[in-house]
Image (cartoon, rainbow, N blue to C red; front, side):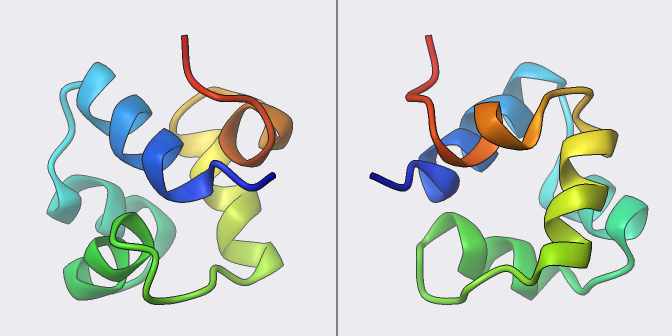
Length: 68
């Protein structure tokens, strides 16, 4: 199962980041982050790597495991 949308939202908020903050770090628009969190857009691999680095979590934590 893919938990990407809910984990992205969870970890972004846990780090006190806005959608704009994380968008700037991964070189996408704020709306793209919003779409990822609403599960209306699929994240490409390069952006997924950047998101995991920006949030200091593994890709597995971002997509596979439900957040704690």
